[in-house]
Length: 244
Image 1 (cartoon, rainbow, N blue to C red):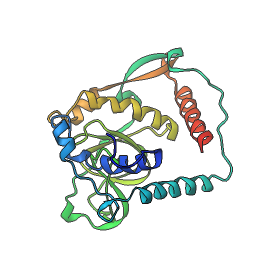
Image 2 (image 1 turned 90 degrees about the vertical axis):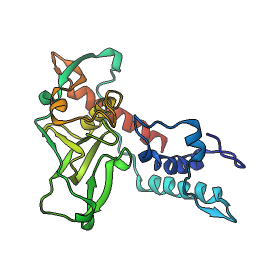
Image 3 (image 1 turned 120 degrees about the horizontal axis):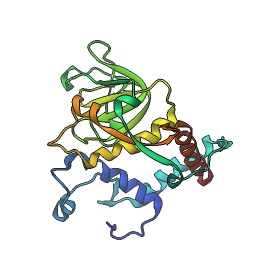
């Protein structure tokens, strides 16, 4: 996709990508985007004189970028002790039930029963970390924290790490292991995301299927190599810090 009447740069591209991503909820595995669909899509953009305001888009993203850069006054880089790559470790499949000691689906909460608040409500959206709304409900809901959410329907298989306390809908399953940290969760979320190739809107991931699913993990002496996973993601975070 190439915009008309403007030379594309990374700042305009980031703004446009975000707006186009918002259209993803209209499609799924069984309803793919064809060329004619792409041409017919409408995206919301800032405008001036009925034309896309690319100057605003570029400046907006630049401001966000530099705000973030200012916040990181001193780069807190991780100490790396493991420099192995994927092809230098052994990989073995593990059942979900052998990795996560708490696997639980969220609870149904209709739009009409949602009370406006500031707690993230996680559903099966494939964008914004699965956040569908911000609510304040405290009764007849299931709340979790510091875990993964796996979409059972909608964007089936989409997996996100949730560091904050959140309320889970019945369209996602919470995956937790008290021994795991942020970096290990992030590593695993990428691998579990591969389930999107196996399931679709017409073939959801139910509780039975989740418990039978396997995840391919690096191992050391026959056990999941959590140290490698953590170190690998810290290396990636260091690379991002180097680019700021």
